[in-house]
Length: 111
Image 1 (cartoon, rainbow, N blue to C red):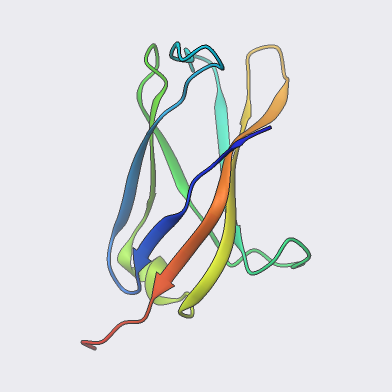
Image 2 (image 1 turned 120 degrees about the vertical axis):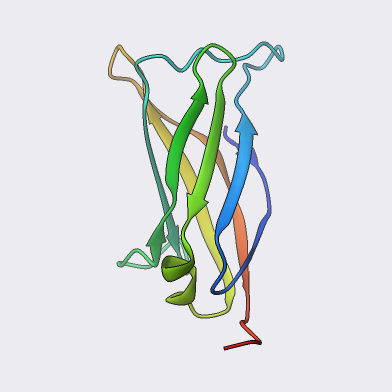
């Protein structure tokens, strides 16, 4: 089962969050030759994606990745609570979900 993590994002601002992906024993996951995908949806049953999180590998051997969205993307998301997850496909073509959770978008005040 994927780890659960709650994220917070200001509407209209750049968003980034760094993750260290680890195995159950705490050792880092080497993410060389992994591909990532990450989406935000209003609910598990939403047919449309609200936005995509960009996943950037910062350090392959340490499993260090960054989730991000630019300010134009966060501006287009209505304030509220959403669900997200991060899926990986490894070199052997195995797909798994490594993290999931709630992302709260806080409303823009200064426009």
